[in-house]
Amino acid sequence: MSQPPAENQIVNDLVVALRERSRLIQSRPSTFTALPLCDQFTKWLQSLPEPAKQAARTVPELQALFKGRRGGPPSANELGVLLRSLGWTRARQWAGNEQPFRRFWVPPRTRST
Image (cartoon, rainbow, N blue to C red; front, top):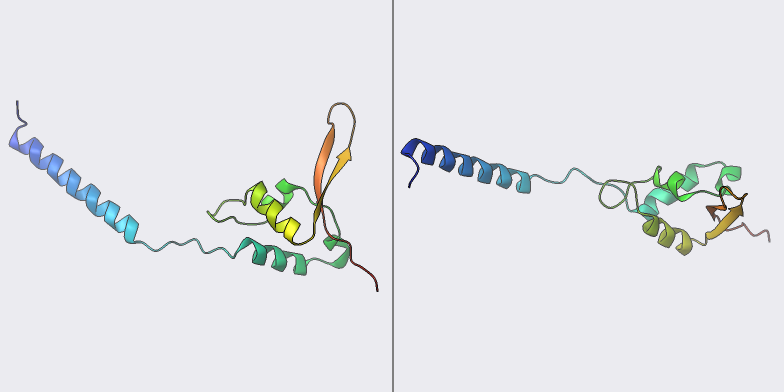
């Protein structure tokens, strides 16, 4: 059983419209142009006053400050790789029984010569 000619035309028109929409979406330039995470981090760190530069930071705190490769927050792994490369270390602050510990990233200490 075949479709009536009017329904065939509607289906054909719909397929053509969907193909055109897909072509337009694919040809549109991407609007997301975030700086690399390392550049974002360096710019942020340089904007802080000296005492704030030495403060320990949590991953969620850092994720809220930067943009990742896909436009959302960077992953914990991306941040960890960056922070380790810049000399930051992980630390834990032990609490009580309800919350065993909190994790922090601690910046490298400045050496006085």
